[in-house]
Structures are given as C-alpha cells and as structure tokens.
Image 1 (cartoon, rainbow, N blue to C red):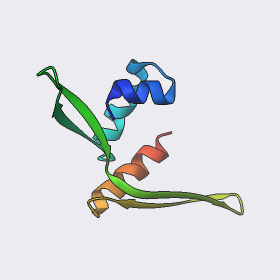
Image 2: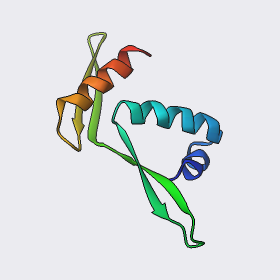
Image 3: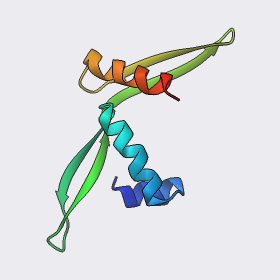
Amino acid sequence: MTASELSNQCEMSESTVYRRLNKLEECGLVRAVQVPDPDGNHKKQYEAQLDELVVSLNDGEFELNLQTTTRTQQYADAFTNLWEGL
C-alpha cells in the first residue's frame, strides 16, 4: 500500500503514517518500492517484510515469535530492539 492508502485504511494522518513507516523501514520490517503511476509519475508502495508475528501472553509474560520474509536474524533483532524501545 502507499502511505496515502495506509492513512485512509488506518484512519490516521499521513505524517503519522510516514513516521511509523520510517521506523519500520529502519528495522527492516517494511520495504519501500517505487512503482509507476498511470499518469507517468512514480510513487512508493510499502511491503511488509515478515511472514508472521505472534504475540502471546502467558502467566503475565509476553512471548514473541517473528518470522521474516528474508529469514535472517537481522530483522528479528531489529524487531526486538523496536519492541524494547516502546
């Protein structure tokens, strides 16, 4: 989706969407791809770079299971850093 499409879908401002996309892109969880527009311009579409994220709460403790598209530990580590920073 484009940032504009995400903004409409999530009912939030585009500036908020861009801030969050930038953080996710820095962590490797989202990838921006340039795609041609029918009017000849280009726009960015954002693609998730993970296959599955499972968050469980057991006995008062969170458990995360992350499977990335690229299957590298780099993205799992990036997500852990992002999660711990919240």
